Length: 79
Image 1 (cartoon, rainbow, N blue to C red):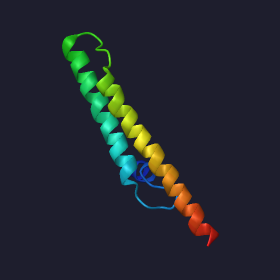
Image 2: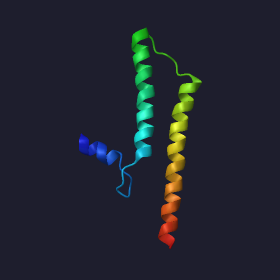
Image 3: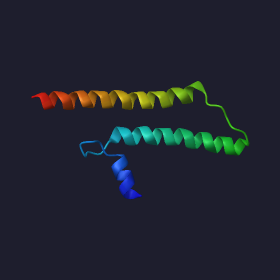
Image 4: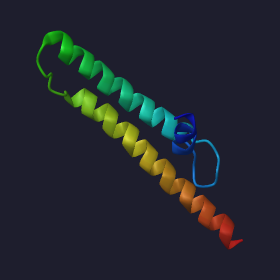
């Protein structure tokens, strides 16, 4: 299990990915809180715009970071 997590949070170049860790941790926290509140209330609570906005921001930030990182790697390869 530990080996899987190490590989999951590792970039293609072998370095650890803090951005991937933060993105997944943020999403897990939001889903965990939603699940807890849904279980406590006995009904499925609908997601609010704030929750969806946070998830969208986390995923968007990771997407932008990955794109910038790939551009930097491509430029270094051209040198």
